[in-house]
Amino acid sequence: MTLTGTISLTGPAPSFGPATSLVSSSYGDYCAILASDGVVCWGGNNNGQLADGTSSGPDSCSNACSTIPVPVGISATSLAGDGDGYCAILTSGMVDCWGYNGSGDLGIGTTGGPDRCAYNEPCSTSPVPIGISATSLVADGAGGYCAILTSGMVDCWGDDSFGELGDGQSSGPDQCADSSCSTAPVSTGISATSLAAVNIGYCAIITSGMVDCWGDNSSGELGVGTTSGPDTCGGYSGDANLPCSTRPVSTGISATSIVGGAVNYCAVLTSGAIDCWGDNSRGELGDGSSSGPDTCMYSTPCSTTPSSTGISGTSVASNGNSSCAILASGAVDCWGASFLGQLGDGTNAGPDTCMESTPCDTTPSSTGIFATSLAAADGYCAILTSGGVDCWGDNSEGELGDGTMTGPELCSEFSESSPCSTTPVSTGISATNLVSDGENFCAILNSGAADCWGSGFDGGLGDASTNNSDVPVPVVGIGP
Image (cartoon, rainbow, N blue to C red; front, side):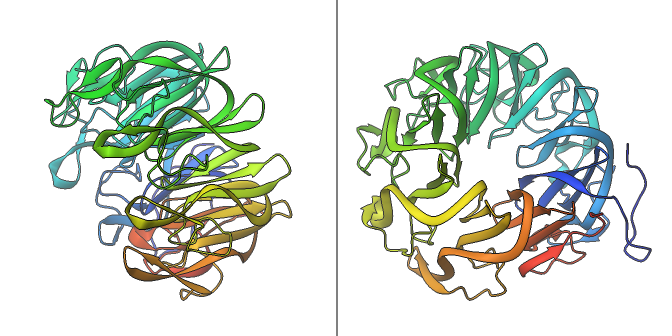
């Protein structure tokens, strides 16, 4: 089914039916795939993220926005967002993209974009085909995507300042907004079954099961035993000799799943053990140290090779300064920074102290819950084995969803106190899918309805308002 038409808040409430999955591109916007395969989006629209043919949005938030979902006009099986837009795998298998195009994000062979959005930047306010067929997509934090094609090969497009294209070039075939780029998909030369991204790089589980990485290596993100990188890239300035790899290079491990933080990765190995590598300034490696076996750029502690956390699990989630894992038993352990209660272990002091006197835990500690799924913001929410949803960490925007913005505790971030919970608290809902935009959470309930809570910035809750909510509120028009 393809959704078309417009929505007015003065008319009847829309009814799109139940949803099956959610994706967020950045603070304040979401898209949902419906049970009908149709796609609806809500929240910020300054770069055409709503794909409704405008960049103005039907509503006025701090930016152009829609406070309720609007139909995109495509049928899709999966979505990915790069911070300023989205790409979708259609039910046909082909890939369409929309939103900002200053870094060649659209993959259409130009940085001009069919439209002009905020600050007169190039964009597309409706989905445009990029000419590839794919089975999965992932976006980094710098304006680019990589896709596993139906052939199994991996293509990438967008920014190439740190070799993110993986095509052997750091200059990019094109020049985008002050950086090298590719405005159309280019081949990395590898075949893969899974992809993960950090801010400026990617890792892939290739068809052999081994893990290859490419892009920036300033914090040891390549996992190859060095911070120097096989190549040097120009970065955003275009003249810095920054360590990188412009081709996929092997980490030497085999894995079944992998997740990226800001500048580090964690992987579930084929043995079930969990290894991490990259930045360790806040104990992100979970290996019992915050000093790191290596030192990366700016004298930052890191590990340039995968390092063992000492636990085995099935999946990992990361918010960039901490990580949580679902163990083989279903129990949830967390490690890394603890200044906002992110570890869920009953303290924000941390048994350890990491860089800049940050409280942390350099080894995994127990949250006391059992879960099947995790989502990360400045804290975490989990779908419990019972189906219920518990949250912990920062509560300054109502992210706990427990009916209070004061939080059971006060945590400290950069000498300022913020409401928080250092242990998981119940939201009172049961869910099948859970996603965060970094400042709020949205969940698909058992019924197929969608609830959101936390920051209402740019209409991100989809409840026809821009208000914050400390309890889950229904997204207008999504449900049975």
